[in-house]
Length: 249
Image (cartoon, rainbow, N blue to C red; front, side, top):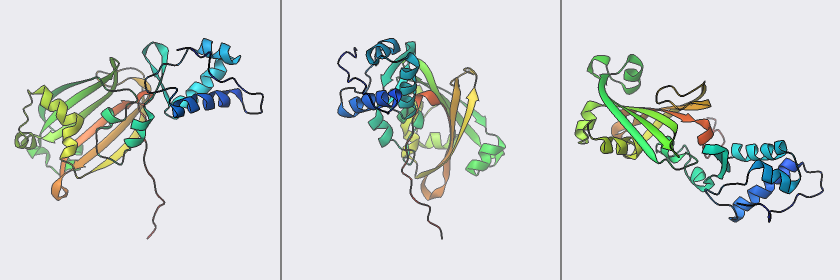
């Protein structure tokens, strides 16, 4: 993509990086730039607007912060699917590793085993440790061949039997972690934490900032049915949520 026809900067008191932000933002809003388009490189943009690369970099970073752009492999800057982000707010029940990624998830790798869960998860689900033979299903999520998120789903083995899911059936397990578990849900209690990982640890996504989402999924009769924990590379994820004034009793 070239930028020869992109609007010029104006002689105003508005900082150059703000004008660049506005130009790219308006091109996304108008459809001139669409989901998946690649922006020209910093050198081309800096030369076009006669500004420094750091000025372009500042504008691009702020567009990334606001969810309009993202960095892909090879240091490419791409236009993100903003509509998908706005529609997939955290108030809805779905797998955030799949729905909130700024680039489509292309591969989900799963593995599983049976184990007794620890006291923490047992307490969350209202089980006794001795009676909690759980299926632990690990999933790794890839976009553009890059590991961007991981999760572990812990569900009682009796429920897998009830749903006719075998641990050897990777396709059914993939469906369970990506969407099906939420079809059995009535609500979910969620906690969100930010942390740092210096590099990939096993199947955990590396990155300066990692978002950790922990949730207990509740089914019919208000009974907890699963514990789900997600690790997401913050550079690849955006979230939205409708918020309302606090109603004081």
